[in-house]
Image (cartoon, rainbow, N blue to C red; front, side, top):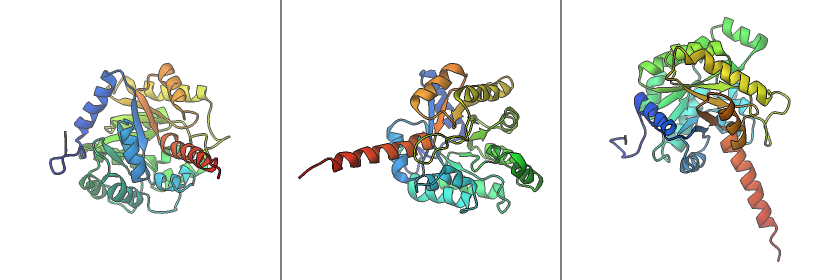
Length: 285
């Protein structure tokens, strides 16, 4: 359904996004979501046929040549950065596919209902919980949980977003987190199995094997599927990087698709720019 003010797609209602994704599955296609840290990334990912875009604050770091994990650090206001990328770079150039805002739900300085109102007014069709504390573990995760910056704050953000008719696609690392999110109204669950490998700034030794990724992804799906069968299940991260990797996950789990940030945006730029520059430099006089 086009926006009546612009003739373009965004924003969509929660149900309209669900209907679009279900149509993709009914057509026998996997759902493919992508991160976009710049307008040109968004424009050409849409041309490639992605089902939706997510604006992460990490996209700014990623497309500046830094590791995506910088988005979890205190190197800027995550919520403000995502809104800025959306307002000035992505939403003005996207023609039709839904765009979701990465929201740092545990930001203690935000009245979350107020901030989500701004997200909706900006023209985003949904939200994602990024930066997310679900991918933080150990002692530091315990400190976050005990000092009021817990994963539960992200769950409550999704509950609010659902009430505000915003579609929600969420990162989780454990089955119990997936259940919490689904019960709060999350439309799509992304099984996050670790930082993406490969390329110039991907991890090497800090990720899991493909077998681990398959097991974790399916355990998250199984935890939610019985009580929330209408949930969309997506895979992300770790060794799941290339289309061939995603093919393995789709074959060996009940996932409906994949969300790629580094896998689509960063990898595409790294390889294509390097190869194209080499072709130009091969010219002789």
